Image 1 (cartoon, rainbow, N blue to C red):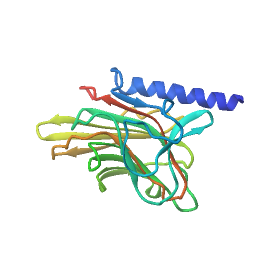
Image 2: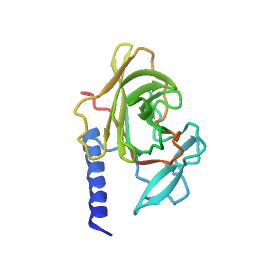
Image 3: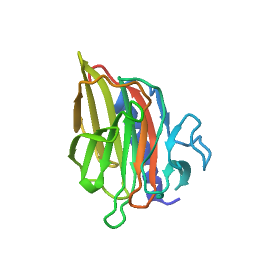
Image 4: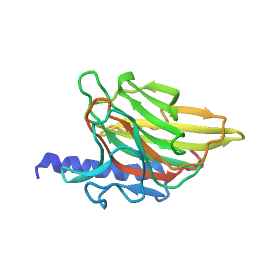
Length: 219
């Protein structure tokens, strides 16, 4: 194993540890780095909505892969079902091919709930509900780089819920504040967190270090 590979893995470990501390002072409610899942399988506690997700071995690390075909939208659910008070995070990697780009997201509140979606073709990160865009901000995605995503839904007052998200490239500092927010006045439906992907570039999308934590009251 060369020095560059060792340093890369160490950096990934340190970032993952940092995610635990940054997300909340409490222990994770759910987490999965796929190291305990058999290659070629998906975790037993996943509910795969659609897609041929499977754990793969890559440079000594296990991760979840969504194949580059077919060119549709796919996803899975994990963790506990709640309507508010959860934060989901993880890192996702995709690649472009020519002018074709993937999209990918983490989500809360089940299939029709809120997604924090990276849309490289638009150079943006979005909050969507189901497939309906609610908010968008500029984001410079990098092909082949891991992108960290963090999304939370919390009660913010009578009849108001805050949907808040962050996205940043691995190796960069996590933003100190939420980079995109949405004020929801319709009570969220309870549901499980999840992750999604659309391999429109025809190349695989990878997922790793998924985590669900409780939202801190002060956030």
